[in-house]
Every structure is written in structure tokens, then in C-alpha cells.
Image 1 (cartoon, rainbow, N blue to C red):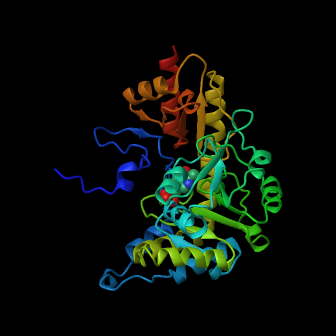
Image 2 (image 1 turned 45 degrees about the horizontal axis):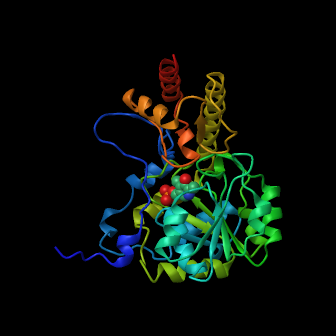
Length: 353
Ligand SMILES: *Cc1c(COP(=O)(O)O)cnc(C)c1O
């Protein structure tokens, strides 16, 4: 049969998301979902959404949601862009700000979707190895001749976080290059660069409702930056999909970001479990770098990441593993609710004995 796939479609290697298995009920610690439910106010917005308006297209500019995000971030709505998950926002950054002769640069170990997007949009990529195993090497990044950088902070999958002052020094040192700070996990660290967007026109901060707001199923992410960057993203959106966010999503996410107290509470719960889990894992002899995220990067001498992953899966606990250089020595484990973490620790003790 004739292969109708374009040359490009055949050449691309798509991103593989963490598994969402249906075969049995796992303790799911593999995709950094939040173990707690979304805000009751978000659920109320869902339940009171007027279904009889679904014959109409949603607001293509997501005005009300952008107002609520702007209020939370201390900026104006013209500084905010929303997309169908922050993955979509990050994807649109490539055609908006990069090109065949305008390369993107990021750490060699980081969110692997950047590389996929770059190939998809024919943007050349330059990468810089981590230093001292786990940390981003800003001195070497600065020396790379590129259009801009993607900096996941905290980084994935190491969890390593960069303090705000260090991010600012980097942003200030590359005024002619765009710095895209992917802050998917920032609420679990608490040093967001978003306020710096008022000061630096070369900074775009990307955030998501998927992790700290417990709304991975809703698909909403956003960018904060100066109006010309935001306008660039709107241009790309309107070349691709005018309505990436449905009305239900807009209403639910708006209610979620307005419920500041609930957000704080669940973030605190996740952080205190992260601290406990990290200590327990270290006590079992695992190497666990400090994490500013809702997951831990876990490795151990004489047992491969694959073995930990496989044995845990047999025991009904799902974690994330990549069979790639460096990463194959580790697993990435999402911080679950207390009882889930207890089961994880129990199973690991069995596996090690
Ligand atoms: C989870 C994640 C995202 C995106 O998540 P969405 O669900 O698409 O908002 C972006 N960047 C990193 C580093 C992530 O881990």
C-alpha cells in the first residue's frame, strides 16, 4: 500500500508520554499528577457550567481566565497567553520565536518534549551537559550562540531548582536572547521568575494547571511575558487553532487560580510529603538530589533504574524510567499522597532485601 505519510512525518520521533495503563489499578507515581483533587471551587464551576451554551464557540481570547491569571501573577491580561496545556504553549514558542536559522538551546538533560517540538518546527538545537551530575551549567549556556533558551525550572527529570537570583543573573546576562522559563513545577519551589517579566523583555515564563492545581485532565497552561512576546504567541495560535480552550476549561481554571488558600494548602501537603519521602529513600541508600518539584529523581548503586521500575511495576507501583544514557541509572518518582508513598517505601524495602 502507498505510504501517504509526508517525508517529515516519517522522519519525526514523537514524544512518549508516561504510560496510563488500563490492565490493573496501579499506585500511579509516573506522570507527576497531583494526588489531591482540584479545588472545590473549580469543581463547583464545573458543576454549574451552563451546558446550553455549548452550541456557541468559546471565547477565543479566554479574557476572563487571562484576567484571573494576571491578577494572580501581578501582571496585566495583555501579559498573559493561554493554551491547551503548557505543552501547547511551549510548542507555539518554536514557530513564534525560532526558525531554521534561529536555534534553540537547552540543557542536555531536560524535558524531552523540547527536542521533539524543535524537530517538528525545523528549529536547530544546541544542548549543554549538566554540571556536577545534576545542575544546569549557566556559564556554558551563555556562551552558546543561539536565538534563545528553554530552561525547565525546576528541571525535569532531576527536580533540581535554580534560585530566583541565579535565574535573574542569567536573564540579565543574555539581553539579546529569549529565555523561556518552563515553570511547570515552580509552585513546589516558590521562586517564580514571573515578576521579572515586568523588568525583562527577553523573558517568557510558562506555567501549567496540570501539576500544582491538580487539573492535568483539563489541559490548560499559560505564558507570562511582555506584550510583544504574548502577541507572537497569539499570532501562532490563530494560525493553528482559534479555540484551544473550551468554555468549561476556562471557567474551571479561573475558579482554581482564584482559590489561593486551597492551592497553598495542597502545595504544602505535597512539599511535606516530598521531604519525608526523600529522607526515607536516602535512608534506604538511594541517591536523591534535592528536588524543588513534586517528584524525586532516584538512583542507587548496583541496581539499574530499569530494575527498580520493573520490580515496582510487578508490585503495582508505577514510576517513570527512560532507557537513555545517564537517565537509565535513575527512576523519576512522583510524590504521592502519604499512603501511596508508604506503599512505595514498603515495596522498595522488599525489592532491596
Ligand atoms: C508536565 C510538564 C509540562 C506540561 O504539562 P501540560 O500538562 O501540557 O501543561 C511542561 N513542562 C514540563 C517540564 C512538565 O513536566
